[in-house]
Image 1 (spheres, protein in one colour):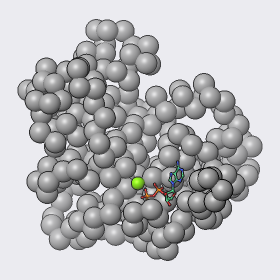
Image 2: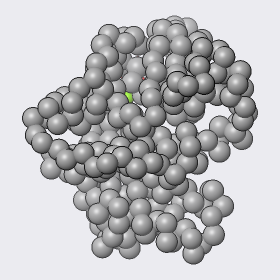
Image 3: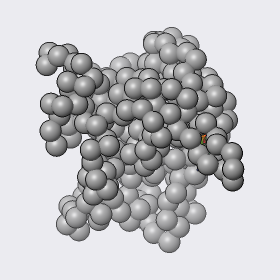
Length: 265
Ligand SMILES: Nc1ncnc2c1ncn2[C@@H]1O[C@H](COP(=O)(O)OP(=O)(O)O)[C@@H](O)[C@H]1O
Ligand SMILES: [Mg+2]
């Protein structure tokens, strides 16, 4: 991938850190019968490397649509999107699939684990697609599960895990490829409070390791874990502010010294 053209287009200078995510006047329309649904109406947004951002807004405000575009699962109807300085429109399907597999980790509200596979086998799957050899797969999946506190339950099937444990397994699956960008769409939407806090502390860890984390939620206390909140209404950004996560949550959090995620993005 070359980035020089995109760099010129976003007007960054070589000294400025390039935003990982850069959207310029993005629109997304869906055709429903003979009406157009305007899911995004002129989104401009930049997210820097290592940021932890919460996307908030009522149901139907365009959060998932925005996430799908940022995650290269969908494309804008109009406007520009650069991922790590690269204009995504210049990439073909193979490039996009590779980026999704290697550089982006996805977590969804419904954990999407395969029911007939153990937690370990579920977490190994992205490595299967990435062509990693079986022994390496097992070792890396084990480490990812240990990192989310599921080392003891790797051989359990999803039905033998609580909701919070299933979501932690899904987070392990999202990070097993060591992606620099983690995208989560209402990851605590199906969890009780205690499990939600558990899962959020895993995201906070990922951020402290240097990963860029973008998390959709409509719960204020969940958004309180992030350092920046972007609010959507009817497909537009209506608020965008930085916050101290510890203050926002009203609790003290020790911030681990940031390390760096393995892959550049
Ligand atoms: N595939 C689709 N086809 C038609 N309309 C859609 C589609 N996906 C989303 N929408 C519509 O776009 C708007 C934004 O949806 P979405 O991004 O899912 O919002 P949120 O995640 O904030 O609830 C809604 O009006 C929704 O009904
Ligand atoms: Mg949604």
